[in-house]
Length: 395
Image (cartoon, rainbow, N blue to C red; front, side):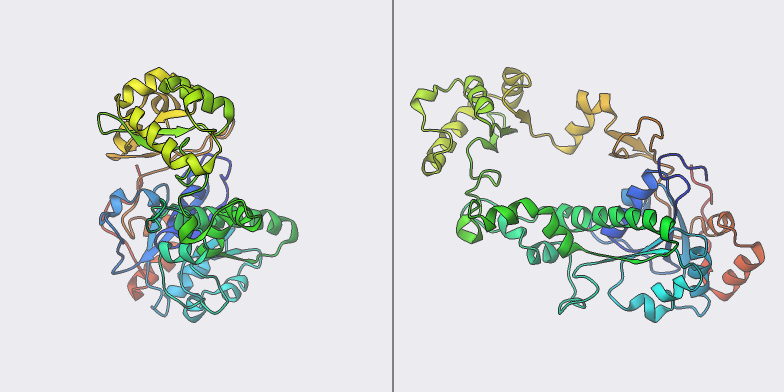
């Protein structure tokens, strides 16, 4: 498979997992890395609303080899691929890959420059290292979940954006690339320990700082009373007359003045913008005014001013003229999805193929990575790998 993008030439082994691991691997593959995903030889499954591997967008752009890591020869497959890889990423709980014989020391024995990426919820050490959890648990542990939500209500789960994808997969991708750069100078690999709790805390760095200096009201009583958490009347989403929503983010005084012009509200009749004691009343005034027109009316009136925009649902976002012009979304194999980001002027990123079925490329991917046909056949015979019956080559 020929790869483009700024990471062309980077070789990564991904031991199949869910959530942040696949997101990290997708980012690397989008940018041109040759990522081989090792799926379970049997019983591979997805979690959540998506039960079809062909529509699992986060698996795009790479090939799948089906491996039985509990088979006596399964570990050989991993170590053979690791021999020529720059990085490996796995999402097991601490100690599992060591028990399988493919831990960091096992891999460094065949490739001392390998960067070994580890994705967990709570990290490789600490009192909670072996605790089970999902995104919501890790964001809760980070202190960030307590800050998300409206006043007087329970915290709101922020999809899986803060723990799995931002605090997990994105942070791991950054760490892997930094460690690969270092390894090319030193000739030595290292473990990259990425924990979603730690990463979520990092994403909340600004807000932890605000709490520390007393400018952010925290805890149940403070949630939803601050400037960007739905407390401020000039930073919220408001219902329009047609039931659609308008996003208002007019924080700066000049944007706030423009907002009042758009809404046809007289500032002389309103309390000062930053008088928090009057925020609930001011919010009601703005809400009542926004509810008098449709979303389209307000967007047209704002005309790019006052930090006012439509709250688009996914289908609307796909079709919006700006997103179409920027090619923010694309359709591949019948699935609409975001395009690789960011943009590169000379080495453009691309999606190298749709998500594979587990084991779809076992023979071709192993061969491309230099494994001889007799070894592949022997692994198949032993049950260490499995070739899916679908066509091997990606579109």
